[in-house]
Length: 586
Image 1: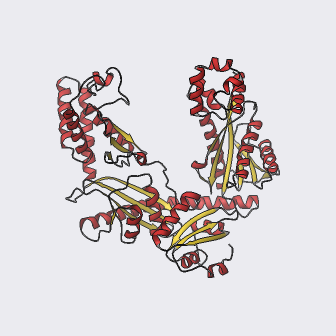
Image 2: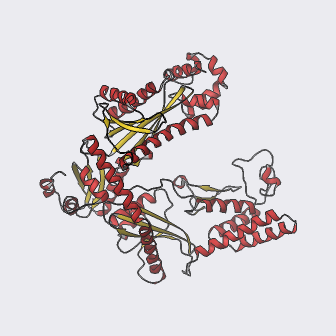
Image 3: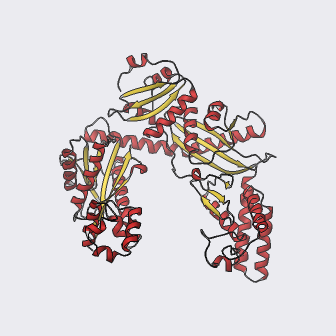
């Protein structure tokens, strides 16, 4: 660890945002503080463990920006995190947003599940979030069975199957009174807000009707729907006596692990809950604020947010522009305590497993550094390619940080039609990747992990040397049964490593992941059909250009008959040549 004593002496005691950098000048962590000097000193004095230890070992320099207020420093911190995506700042485990149910505000409304709610202009007809996506789908299916809403995306010229089974009123051909539509909407909205009486009554009526018609299978379906509703209502019951609508947040911190619990209260019911456990750099409240900002970028902000006393309500209220409340007594305080108990329970259940997994990773990283005789290995990039009968190659790259996958940074590659073998395909992918790293000043890896032995390592070394880059390379060589047998470095030296070691296990996981990624890319392309497969494999052709080509030529046969010049009327000359060469191979 570097000695920052002189630089720390110059840091002011004012609020601001600070940025930690590694030896390559890459920002690896962004934080904020009321007192910059105290916060920055805390990293370099005393004992640090876990994720904080990895960060401190990785710090080569730091910078800071003084602000006039804590809100300003928070806004600056979040802006910098979004810009640089630092590796040590917290990430949501599941990047997907929770589903909501939308009753569309149209003349003839539909009911559907939506996720990307930030694009929605009218948020008054969104209900959720539903932490259980299966429950959301069940709810939508049930309502669509009971209420004859419009089922098609666009009105057709004649009634479809839903009309004939009485699940649509035939809006395409029939004049439906607005009063009837409004009545359906009123009942559906009431149910989505928690009033189940009307829907329960309807289900009972449909169940008895089906039973009297001797349609016992249908009657059973309605019976199960009723049971689902009763179970859900029982789970949602809390004693608030008011139709509150808010999100309630609490957390529990223990030894670098933070468990965050969010209760979604809708119409006075516990509509759903969210929990996530993350390994943290800071202790407690600052990490919770950063987490909430990331969480509500993909979820609908409530009109009221209830938080524990440790968090700054004024800061959050200003940032989110919503009402933020700290319940100090009564039923809401009891609910806040319950959220904390749930957060603690989750961390108690998982903490030992989390600690064990992290310790295994840290040990494997130390073993890798020792094996390669280097001071630091964190970022690893691995490559594989896939082909169809020796033609139509595609490549895949996966990225791991400290043996954890960074799926947002995975990349797919379409490969030139002239390529007829694995090594040529790998040569093209590696050159394209690291030429881009060089030209665009992207973060380069500490280690390239090749899915293969000496031949693959030589190809990687050739490309890295030609671009004057300094990156370590290893290859995972396989035996005749296609199992990883040994490891070789850029000097083609075999590295001694036990097949029972944690390091060997993590390296083979990377190997399996890149192989899966490349294969799945090819399978997805082939699944689209013959014509789409060919076009999707041509470098420079995406969905827009594919549609334009299909619009002009209509078939693969006519495309094959076209000259390069004719193809270039739709796409650029370089892409036209690629397409022409691909089509010649068919």
